Image (cartoon, rainbow, N blue to C red; front, top):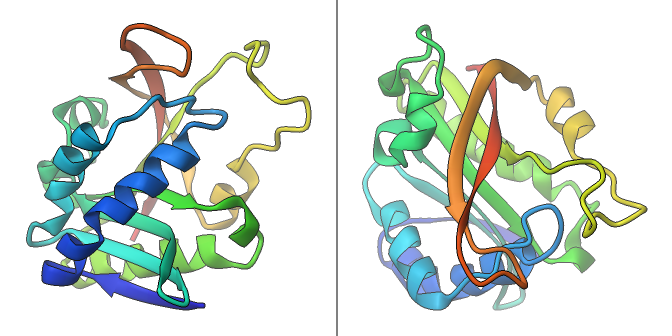
Length: 191
């Protein structure tokens, strides 16, 4: 397996593969995202901009995982609006998402995703690294009985939920006919 930073032409060439990974991985709990390629292409175009980063994981020539990040000022305003006053958007690097096909999980790639994005953010002079996790009710009917959240992993990396920092972001859940807003808890650590 190979881990690579994607930017410029390499990022553009990988956009459809990253979009397909997002649609596949986020279809599962807890996101339940019913995505489409047109939206994904548009959304991912932001990660080809200066300051953004994409970390790709390849098994041979096949992209099996990807992790993105960008300055908060380049991301959705809903996330920046949820930040506390001491975290101005100009000081925050947003670790957007990490998607990895199930057979490749548990091999330390989550750490490599965070390491690469945090190193990139430090190199650009950001003070904070922030990401968001979807908040679903514990009694949600789609929640798998054996689900283990990632909170221990995130805490082990030095992240903590930011008190009262909840963003709203909309998408269509699998099985629904329209998009609904979802609460997302912001997590942060100082860089």
